[in-house]
Image (cartoon, rainbow over all chains, first blue to last red; front, side, top):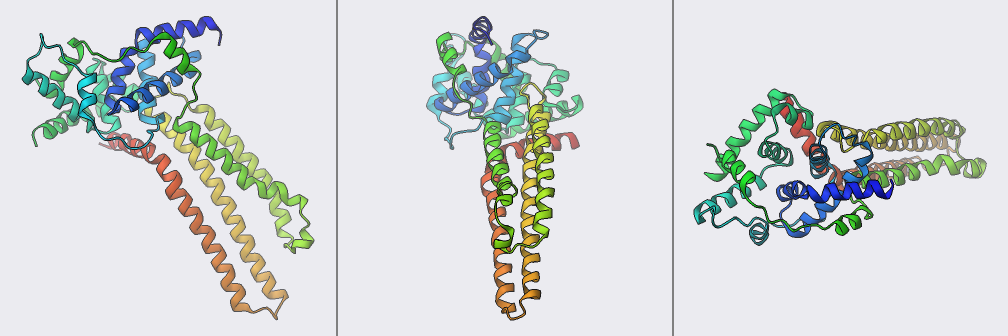
Length: 164
Length: 195
């Protein structure tokens, strides 16, 4: 691929990098793993870029490749424990907008999502990104009904994790 | 408002403070080597196919008379070449299907299929070797009646047993670990489909 294509790709990825960070945030639990997954997603996006025809938005195409990388292709380098420091560092909450109690609750919610399996995390990500069930089902390769049922179960599971 | 909707409103409204990755960092990442599972599967599968293919490739250069191998080994050589060709073709066709743009379930299925193809080839080769060993063992017993039947038979059984044990060990430990995540996620999607 020529330098022009490379430049266009890098610019688009740089502009929409928060999307990739959000996925890394859900699938990793320390800073090194986050960087590692970010890099692998970037490589996979670049490899798949020739197939990106611009029929869909760059973000729609990118999140699908990124989710596939996180769920299927990414190979963790050893086990890493969940670290609260990382959580605080990467997930700072605007103090003007939230009080301490809310901040704690949001942290607990993220911590609960971290305990879900890879597929459940993908569903949560797409739900948080406001994707409709048709798109969620298409991305995962399941039926829309199954996606809805699973989403309701995840909600119940999160409630249980948060209120044991 | 359930828990996830609370998280959603935060997800949308909060100012995330992720470390910004610069354009030059992204450029550098593009030229780094992928450490994806598919790359590892590809490397391992090629090594494996090459390893198991070595037998049929080098065997024509060996003197069958010196090795006192039965005639059936020569016949199996030709069959092996054909089967190796079929497996390599199947491997290539399925490898080309792997794309990160596909739905998650399809991508998982394609990768698992690739592994199954290589595993099937390995089991075919092990079965062939086992067959030749057993065949040679009994032929040897027929032609050399003075041979100590029990010790030859026992040695043969031990060799076959060790080979099978080794194959199971490699598959369960090495590839089992590599594919654990894929299998787990695929099972999860299958389970969802069944609900």
